[in-house]
Length: 83
Image (cartoon, rainbow, N blue to C red; front, side, top):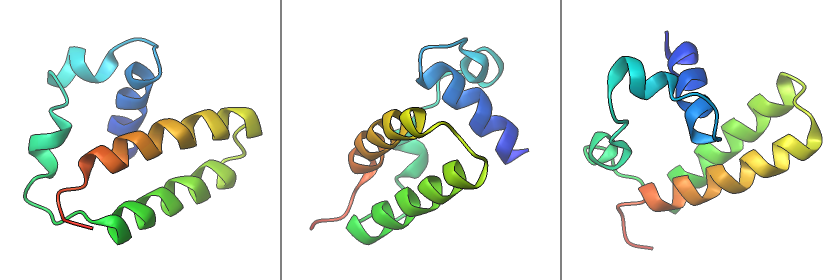
């Protein structure tokens, strides 16, 4: 279920159909992540996991670069702990 939700979210996140929003409403990423302490180590760990996942499924290198930049911006925005 989480993989399907991620697919739906990323579809709209990258300019495709807003599958997630159509089914679940606005993502509200900030409020949904507030209960969790997210600092630089957590951000970097999540980015590492996403990077490995993209490699594991064999995404095109150029797409990986574009997604990695978008993931970084989002992950850094989610930080709620001081540096």
